[in-house]
Image (tube, rainbow, N blue to C red):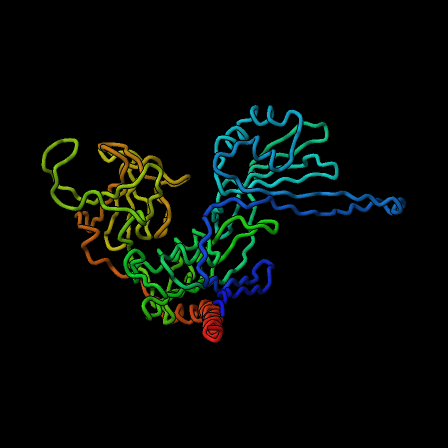
Length: 446
């Protein structure tokens, strides 16, 4: 008998804001091309009824609106995007060229981002949105930003930048490792941003370059941010389980009142150290701590930090919760940020190309928060981050020193954690049951 195909399980539970979407399985390990454009544009028709005054209700007007959206592809131009959307508006390209905000957007088309348009019953454009910026968090609210171009009644146009709050949906996904974490999460439909979070959350327990095994399993509950019924980006990982060579490792998000949030195991023990080892994930150390021949001064000097090689513009993360003690230009360090932490610890980040927008002295930052971007300012022969870790103003090797542990939950916080986060763990256990069911079905079919 011919071999039967493996059948991925796909279950959907609700689609409303705050609801739960479940995509379990994808065990056939088919890895789609990341960032590939859809084969055709998404088209939805919306009928909007506008009721006239009561005295003329027998002449009810009906307005037709057709929404079309497409994803930007590599090599796209404004003209090619408009052609796919079927938009031909007299004077539109001239308008794009005449406005600073539209010229900037036209020069910054990012593959994978979405352009959405609305057409009337005659096929004429009503408005266009370009979702050019990933979601951002502002005082606990997640926002999406987009460029909105609206056609006016006199056939002219207006353009504005819009910030809008997003809604949250929870997604639950699971998969089995065949070759790599990214391959498995791709097959399960998990966004790359969520996969990166998984690697960072569990990175202290698993080396995802060397420790993963074929047959390892993962389960993850994460947020997707929505605006007007369409996804605008992935949000935070809420809970994750990873079975590595038969050993279960898990983490759940919890934010004690008045504190930055973090990830904890089922017993309320923090998974993070007080400091990250690296300010840039997935990079290499180009110069270690200690004596070295200085590349510019050509003499042996103490190297009081470590250098991370990375391209210009690579985001730099705060390695621990702290306060900005210095931000600006500092001699040979070039553009530099110094963070002050508890227990007389400071961290220094040098040679940056630019700082995070709006960051200033006295601001509080959380571990993992982006504070700046790699550059080559000051005494530097190429783009890299020079990172220093100081205790009582004495430099120590951040890769060799034993890092202090994160602050533990007290009894009250632990009870809050159990009430808040453990239901998420229950969701992961339910999807584990689906994985077991799928395995049993496959064994029975052989």
